[in-house]
Length: 293
Image (tube, rainbow, N blue to C red):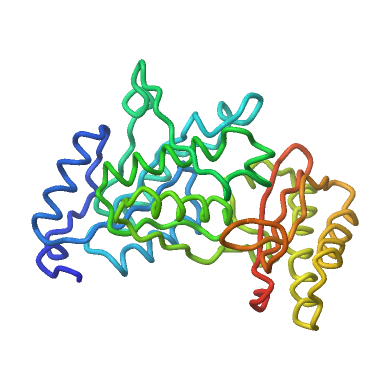
């Protein structure tokens, strides 16, 4: 239940929190006051998709914490850790305008001190597709999400549907480890032409940006076929692949139709990983639902 007392004392400027210990102290005080806590985990370079999660968290909780942490252990060798988009001043301005209560921005040294060797591994749902394409990625995601939820004592944590397999992994770990947090997944936010918002879209050149619309076009065509009664997974996969392959700048890593909860093959969730130029993009859509736009 929301606490009007806690709401009345919301600061006009977010509390800047740099260590897990300070974060735990702040969260403990909020809970003592009867306030609920919503967590929005991010890696920064914020955009409207992130802010939609912040809006949902503000509607449903007394206090909102946004974490900003580029998590090194979820990046593999040769991935874009060093050049991952960063915009700290812009991020802080956006979060201040959104009225969040705290920005949790720990250092790598505080999150992974020397000698730290524990990792969280989720089997099954984390093994295929993104898990196979990016070995160790979900181990890094599961570890950092567990640490963020523990430090913030969040009642609810907010994630975007665009990262559908990550969502399934996080739901499984929250259930398996009895973290006591509700995992809330919010709809993907898209540009007017259908491209899912992503911090990595900043890598795209103008021609690549135009070509990247092939992902949403492929999902829309598969959704239309599903609505007409197509249920053959091989045919649905072919529709996805044909739409991507029609774009010369795009190269498919995978185009699959899976179960939304287990990510086993055959289901209703169409999932894509596509390289447009050198930029790797992912997207998905549950074919049981009308495709937006």
